[in-house]
Length: 204
Image (cartoon, rainbow, N blue to C red; front, side, top):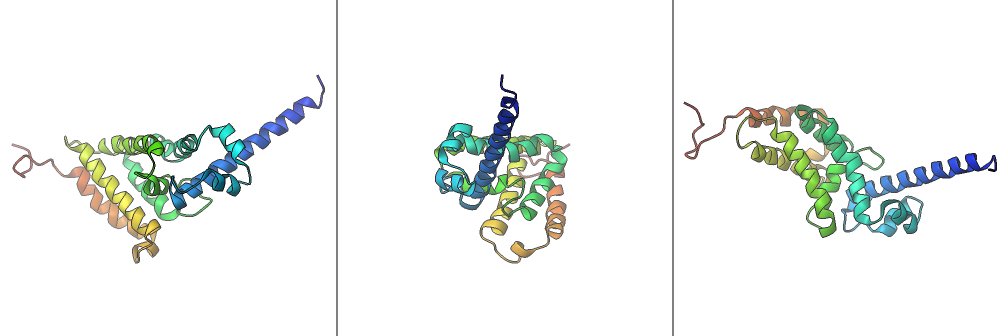
């Protein structure tokens, strides 16, 4: 075997890994900025300084690319974060990382993409279900999944108003102040007793 073959092969692998990562980062940012449907494969490849053929070689399809973007961001974050820290971690990420080049923009991708592309629906649903399961575990109430969905609705609503609508004063608010106000209120959601059919709290 040619002695130069080994180094050349290693160089090609490094180049391929770097190209793959550039495509992932470009897709992450475009999905967050435009949503799944409006972010075209051509635009993703152009932003990555690559071509569509390589995108399909590495990821198989646009849906495969979305799946990996969310797996490296949102799903990885959910699985690696203790449930009691998840809401604050996701909130701070959305408040401070809503710009190109940041590591996790998965909730922005979710906000702009959910309900707008049938082939993306399964991947986005999986992310939502992972968040719901983790957050539901924070309450002992039988309606824990409902409370988790309410917290997710608030989280995504904050993201919508801050990063998509850019409504003031929320868009320019200090992340620490937003977290202080939101988390103090959210604590009541996890601690509140479940209510019975008549509206009264369950208990003796």
